[in-house]
Amino acid sequence: MNLVADVDVRLDEFHEDVHLEVEEGEVVAVLGPNGAGKTTLLRALAGVRPLTAGRIVLGGRVLDDPGRGVLVPPEERSCGLVFQEHLLFPHLDALANVAFGPRRQGVSRAEAAAVARGWLDRLGVADVAHQRPRHMSGGESQRVALARALAVGPRLLLLDEPMAALDVTQRPVVRQLLRDHVGGSGVSCVLVTHDPLDATALADTLVLIDGGRVVQRGTPAEVARRPASQWVARMMGVNLLSGEVRGQRLDLGAALTLPVPGAPDGEARGVLALRDVGVQPGGRDTRSDAGLDARSAVGWTTRILTLQPTGDRIVLGLEYPVGLQADVPAERAGGHPWVEGMSVRAWIDPGDVELFGPSPT
Amino acid sequence: MAGSAGRRRRPPPLLLASGVVAVGLLALPLVGLLARVSWSTLGSDLTSPTALDALRLSLVCSLWATGLSLLLGLPLAWLLARTEFRGKSVVRAITVLPLVLPPVVGGVALLLAFGRDGILGRPLFDWFGIQFTFSTAGVVLAETFVAMPFLIVTVEAALQVMDVRFEEVAASLGAGRWATFRLVTAPMIRSSLVAGAALTWARALGEFGATITFAGDIQGRTQTLPLAVYLALEGNERVAVALSLLLLVVSFAVLVALRGRWLGALRT
Image (cartoon, rainbow over all chains, first blue to last red; front, side, top):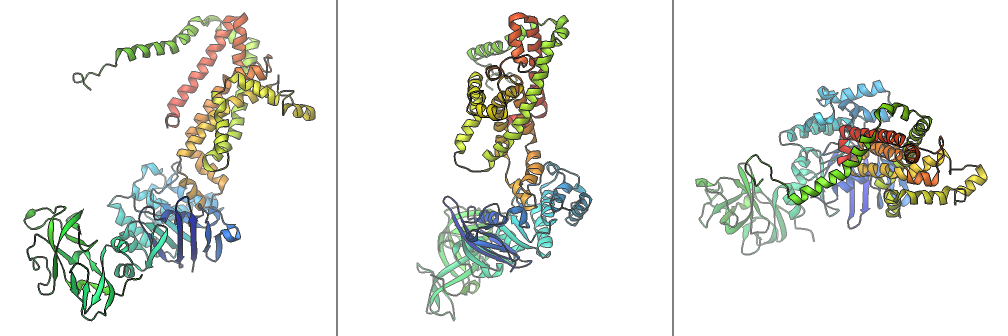
């Protein structure tokens, strides 16, 4: 294990207690809402926020252990840092920014410049070598920032929302870039993000944190298939149904039951893709319109609580069961828009629900 | 804009009137000074031995004071901006006090601390024979006391505004504290550093009250330009006007330099 960290940090009104392990070459994404403690975690690993308790061991070397009075300063940790605002030194050109690290390691000026040129070249930004950061685009800046962090050969790369400040055209480009240069480079990496898309695209392991605690950890597929809570399900973009199985029917409450052949009695949870929920206005039976099998689909009447347009699709938040979301075409038949508070008929095919064990607690 | 298109709305007459009076109040003394300048003798007035001594002393002392302020004020500004410690608010209050303290009071206080009978001045004199009163070192001390707050306040503000994560990135790249300051922090607050140093220098150059109270008025040793102006006014008004003009030109030059090149630092 390259990194083993028990991060215990107490700030004024916030207590973070997160255990994190990262293997050699593994990319771990720490996913959570604003204020969850993601940045605090990163700052503790980087050494700019000392631990209150716990321990950080990187490559067999203790970096922080308040119990034993050990605290290695940031400059001796070999942790590369990349922030969303890239934070390139504004008074240095791209080449000097990237050469900064090697120079601090005692490499000669000429050699550092050669190393920097190599990294800029590898990341496809050799042409901005002699430009100051203010003349670069967001994507170029982020590439230079990544080159700067990688140029010192860090044992651990810390990425703080590296894509959040990029425009939509640059995001997939930089995401691909990170996948090529982080995923395949053998560098251990902790990626902090609030975007599940970035996390699932880049990470081998997801660690979901909220309120300073780990809510769930696992591979992206595991987490998406078995979200530990409604909140995790929401982060991963799936629906989480929970209820009780009795006589091969899953009771979701208030008279809504789904046939679940073969399922044992007891507490049960299941995931359902947002696109597998059909929604039709009014009380009309439109099972076939919604593309659902007319014989097996289960329908009920509910209301639209929230609307979240995503281009040509729209995510509808339904009143019942609590938290259920449906991803439907933005334009419904006849060109009528979806409206908040609209009474609708919702449909799901029980065959689309993937059951997994009883809920903990 | 409420008036007809293309015309600016007139400000209220009362405001306009008081504004004109204010400008007059600030500008008239300068006009008066310029009107009294004896241009034909300006050269000889400025090169009289008294004037040259004062000019040389002023330059030397104000540059020393600026250097000392940088040497002592920069670390303090950094500590105030980047660290937490007990009594920080007290330290900050002490730091800015000389900005509002009447310079004469500063001079008296310096006398009581560093004078021959002062709490620090007496042991310094008894043990090492060091004396600040009536010495050029005393002038430097007085000027530093009065001017250093300008540097500290300006630089601390710049450090507060700067994103500390630049320094964290530098550290993550292997730069120690000093390398980080030298290679990242200082260049990033350069304009504020220059502005702060220029303000400090200008304030030191114009220092009068604390200097005359603490260091006295000895030509060639403690008589700086402002002191020379004040003294010349008694006997040779023409010289006083000439020296005043010189100080005015220097002040104006500092202002223009700051506005032109370092505009951003003073605005933020």
